[in-house]
Image (cartoon, rainbow, N blue to C red):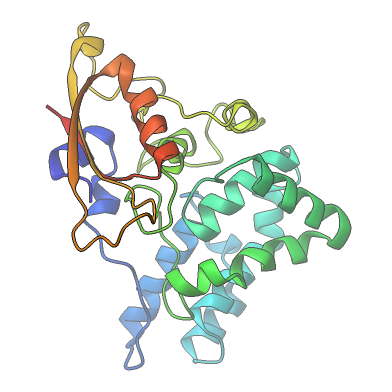
Length: 272
């Protein structure tokens, strides 16, 4: 869980404080409107959609109960509009990065995941690539049939690699930013990090600004990293110990990477 102050400084407060948008069994018309808005925002990377661009057919099927939220998300990602925005005009690796972000709510963990999806697209085509996310066990476990995908990469969860937390900030550029307006949208954002299997310093939404803010002494700030010690399986553990580390900005990325390699789970990163 990210602290409120850290979430504000990192620019992720709207996601940390928001509850997942779900279409429950006793839904109302207002609930459907909220789901449609949330799904459009998530799947289309916060792009503004004109009335003429909206998938009114899929929206009607959802509103009438003929398709689930999962199948509505599928319809958005399989649409010609999604292809135009995130496939036709950008490299395939960037397309796959954004699929992870839009459909699973996280960044790719390693180069093997990118290669797997590249091979699937080449061998099976566009629809199979999109379906591989939506029909995955990971999607089912986190969103099921009724929850709109959301950014999970900002909170540490069971089974999530620490490096995914820092990589998510490479793909995220602010609550008001669109994936179509990012200056680097024509190329992959994570290729170098994935190739080196390395973590990068956490950046805020203001393109290159360090975690601490705008002051000239940012790199002199100290950060508190709290982690649950890894269970190596050597002994039965009733309670896992919690460790805290005070590190400088320059040491933050290396510390997160080192803890990740040990298998420890990070529970909080905040200013000391």
